[in-house]
Image (tube, rainbow, N blue to C red; front, side, top):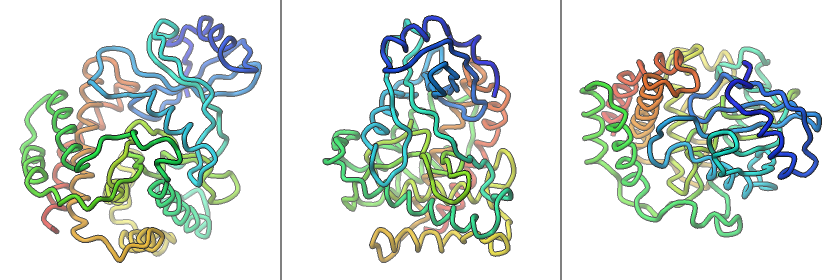
Length: 343
């Protein structure tokens, strides 16, 4: 955490919140969460309690990126469902208040893990956390879109065609140099999109352990965070993105499980996790999973290229970290090509 008061007009913000959030009262002290590279996030400590504020970053942004209004909408819609989310208080699209759109939500107390090896908990809790991740992912993909008012939360049509076109465009807009492997991966994905199988569910878009909060004394998930990339799409994209992350190196930045003795730690192998998900969703299995995995590597590479571009432009949430993450884009491209070779 760092002091966030320099980035927020706390007095104007406090006045607006006192007039728009029932029971809110200042004074307010703002602290910035240092994690995350997209929408800056702050802990607001007010006289009336603790809150969390997420805003669009300052500066010129890529079209359709950093949609805090969509984050607010989907979390509000999921209240009371089997998907745990924070309570949404208010959305402000008046950019004159703090310089960009933002929303305020409740502060949820819980444990957050950056490292999927989960060294800070015992083996039984470790296994429980992974089972809970599997349950929550299946719950997201089982949401009744009509009942939750989300039937128009994403366009119809082939999700992967749409996503590959979108992220290719975003990648080209933030490209800072030629990465041959990324160009090859884009070309392969473009030519190997599977036929639309009709699956259309809510997808989180960035489902991984560091975007989840867990109970302080057990494996229960108390909130799913960071819904910026959520939409209506194909459920295997979420599952593959999680498996993709585990294939990255372990440590602070890779946050993966490559080379880790999972059995010793009580963690599931990739196929075990996939099988458990399929059992929950009533699926016999997933054919050609390598395509979905390759897509996951590509999309994360495109996202991190955008992080690098924002860092170079001076409007990243954490410029130093942004540049380090951006340097890994060629590794994601190579991982995607390796996954493609399994199809």
